[in-house]
Image 1: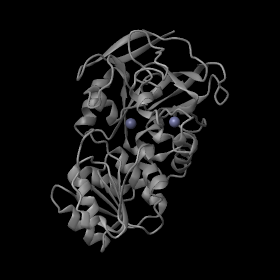
Image 2: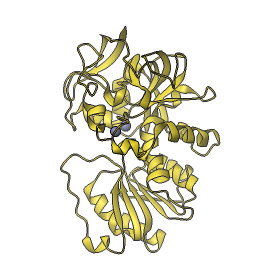
Image 3: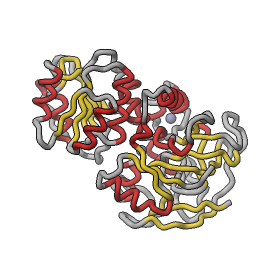
Image 4: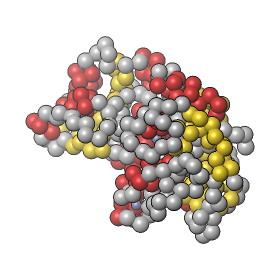
Length: 363
Ligand SMILES: [Zn+2]
Ligand SMILES: [Zn+2]
């Protein structure tokens, strides 16, 4: 069968629309007719080869759609089911077996290798299987492990960002940090992931919830989504404001900026026994300077990938919160037609759109 895909052919190159021949699904694989897909910073990061991958490559890793057909041994979904595609994992390593598939031993090869683990590739002439989905395309090959079946009562085209960005921010708060009621939390960076963290902090009953960003309109949005305080890091001394608002430092700080300076500051703005979670992506080899005296008194610095979620368990929870009006992530989304993929990337880069979602086909 054929899939029409937006292909990155060279570093920083434009998306080129191509009709690509795609093999039939193998055992455990699922062909999905893509309805929509979110755009996440990792797509831009790979387009500019911030992390080196094979090219040409079909990117896209926040896909949703309808199951078209399935390979042998697929039992959890059937043709016609509405599904969200999330991150891939092997299912066999210690982290997968221990309920932490985001830290799968094979996560880099499965997400960025451009092929299946055995080196084969269902896509002819281009690399595919990006995050086990390559969803900048009309059809996508996914796997039972990264496919989440969803109910019919929520608009499918909204749901793609739950598979990566929103799961990442909400999961950092609810799964990794398990922020308790009444704890203070600071979210550094009010993009899609940060705003998901703010909404999750409100669900957890955190107080105060402090959002930090350099754009006032994002801070206003953060306030309307649950932030009790906002700090404009361009105009204000972020560390001083955090210490003032939380009195003796924050119990939790979630850093989406990926900036070494911010991580160092975060450790200094923690209360004793507080935890700073690094969620924002940093290039390999990036060094941050941390005041060792600040790290004493039980303070913790840790990293978080994909909100430490088991997608089949966590995404339905986020949808339940959405239905209950407690996770209104639709307010972050702006839709674009598939052909307007370049504009969607540009708007995201310039900060004009918080979470772009491409409409690929009507269902
Ligand atoms: Zn992502
Ligand atoms: Zn694994």
